[in-house]
Image (cartoon, rainbow, N blue to C red; front, side):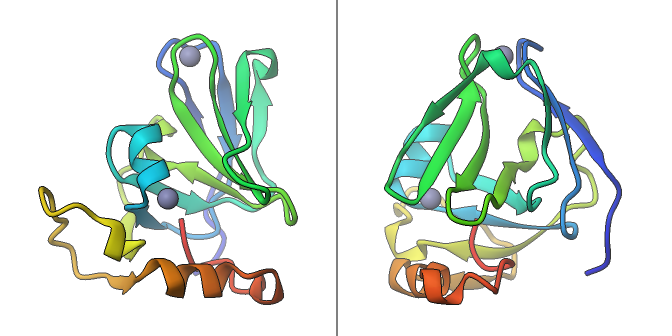
Length: 149
Ligand SMILES: [Zn+2]
Ligand SMILES: [Zn+2]
């Protein structure tokens, strides 16, 4: 769980480039309806705190998907970049947006009760329902930033 190094990433078309330092090499999968629509699959994300540095900020589109969070994407090519909690500035960066995601380990699946039956991930993970994930994310319990994607 120590610091890992800064990683480079970007969108499909290259208009947005960024670097970020993940808290660790763990990531979570979110199966909620919004993430699946947004990414065309389950959303694989890793907590990067406020370490995201952006080149090409003018190409970033922001969708406020709830009162508490935003989804940032490339306006040119549509790549899903990260989910950002407004209150803490925590960025959950798509591991698929990094240039090299080898070495990351899937440790958690959230909104497991919203996962459709037509796919399943076989990894051994901690699984959380929507209610469990939302309880963990509640403003009173934001200290546990390893929870959720
Ligand atoms: Zn792009
Ligand atoms: Zn989700």
